Length: 222
Image: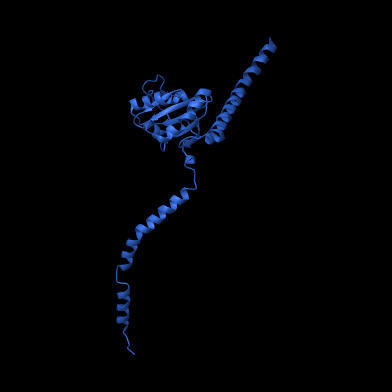
């Protein structure tokens, strides 16, 4: 039987795992591990609705802005135009495929006068935006040409298309990402519009009530 010294045993271990081999194996495995992590995030993301991504502006006043109208239109869009009535703000562009899909729904809202819809035209060439609306139809009460995309950034826009529900008080109540659908309109957006209108009417009634009571009291004294 051959006896081996402790030094020879350590050398054998070194032959099996030479210095630096573990680090090299980790470097080789790193791309595969990164891919697996990204794949996991992607799979988990499949279970989430991208239209319900959170927005830091929900519950806050619309950002201050002022934009000229899309070419060929007369009414521009500013933050001041978003006070006084419940409205929708749609971020659109002539190059946006989703915008083409949802456009008939906005045309229907305009025909039925369901709710005012304002258009925020995102990074579009003026002539292209004008031609697109002329061809597809213009459902917007007002339009704003955001040529640089600066206003959209202030609104926290992820991409085109997006739609915001804005209360009569100028507070952003809801945000939908992606092409709008009949289901989203009938199930979420229009019921919210109605609730906001009812809340506005209730607030107006409460504000007017003391004045009417005071008027009655004054008549009684006369």
